[in-house]
Image (cartoon, rainbow, N blue to C red; front, side, top):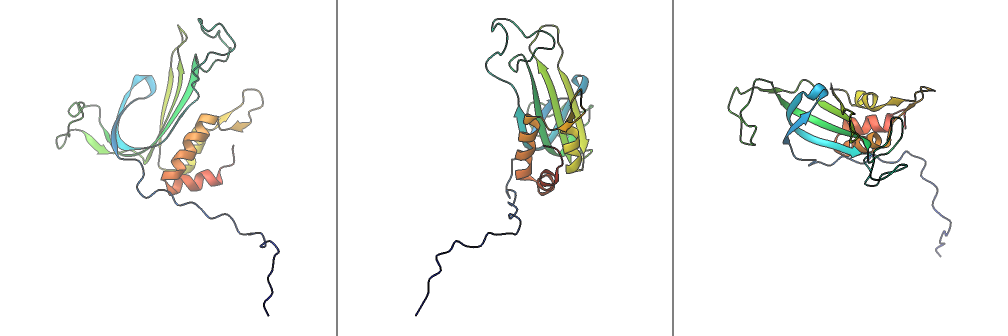
Amino acid sequence: MTTENHSPPAPNRSPAPRVAPSVTGPPVRFHELAGRDDEMLRIQGRLLGFASSEADQHQHHDPEGFARPGERCSACRWFEVRIFEAQTEQSPGCSCGSDGQPHEPGCGWEPARARFLVLTYGLSEVPGEVDKRRASWTSSAYEIIEFLTQRGRSDRQAFLPAASARALAQAANWSDEVQQAYIDRAVV
């Protein structure tokens, strides 16, 4: 005689299994990027994550005009973040290969100064305003989170902007170290 147990299975109390990052990942490509003060950065590496707060529709003002100082409109002003895993970077003296052709030996390609490159851009379409760009190098996935963490103006409360959180989540899919830092992060 057999007895069937129709009760639901006991809840699994162990932590959720970690999802293994993709084995293949994004392709290694040549990237030419604007850094701080319009410095051109040329790297070979993988784009691990990208996100933008840019909106298609203007908000809170005349759609034919621009947001005034202090006024929010993500179609006028927005934030972008890119997270790269860099392999090599081009020193400023190299000019070959800019057309996508292979570089000659000794042309200025060197090992990247750190494993990860984090670019944050504050962009604006408002006349008279300037774009603000920051390029930060690190070999620490945990420091990527610190680069992306912002603090409120009045209460200094730490938070990750939505675009930063999205780019970080994408990067966590491609890198074990970024995935662990993403899981361990103290800010949301």
